Image (cartoon, rainbow, N blue to C red; front, side):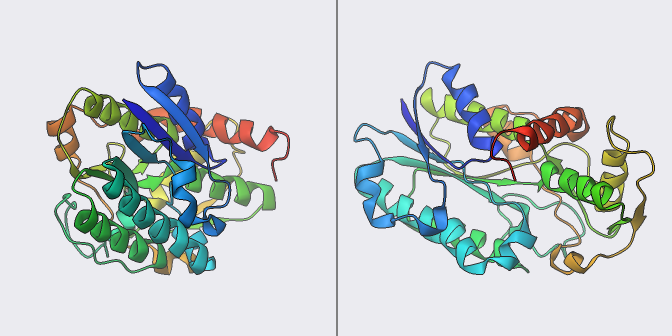
Length: 288
């Protein structure tokens, strides 16, 4: 199976490509450095003719960034996936698309299952939900994978607070599950390998690390990592950006386990690796 991986300069694309290249799959990368300005009419030139599966590894999991750049979010979270789905339909290609827990409003008392309809409360979730619905209508042979919180996003919040010597406010009322880049790449690789083996298991799935936690508790866990200054103060308070965080983004991940045999791994086990990955990226030439 020939797999085309669409990626940016973020770590997910790099790690996913490394994993996929260790398999028997024929893998091609397609770097889209600025998805918001990509020429979607040129897909014919981007996608090799013998492509069987397009994996869109452009992972949007930061609702704050989405609110600050609504036009770019619209293009990356909606316009690009829909253009890929239309192209894939016409060329008999399957599509693997990422979404997130932000398609939900968080009012549910327990975890969300994959068949629950979206009720987004922020820019990111709105376009991801619209994208999901469009893919279901356009392309039967699709995989939508909703993810939990980005662990990296909150490690960076801790790092920014320590650099500025500021108290870090995180809301204890918001609960969910983080997922590390390494773990997400593991899950995506496992799904792709089973599609290569002939699994006709198209549809919507969910994955996040095991153990539901509040954002405040997550901040405390990150603050306790080796290399994080011990004098960092994390407080249970609602920061300004907390208004766009749903109170509950817990994802039930039994469907992906029952269909593909993919088990949830504890997000805590990936914290040290995730921190090291971010530090390495910060040291890389050209890092801002």
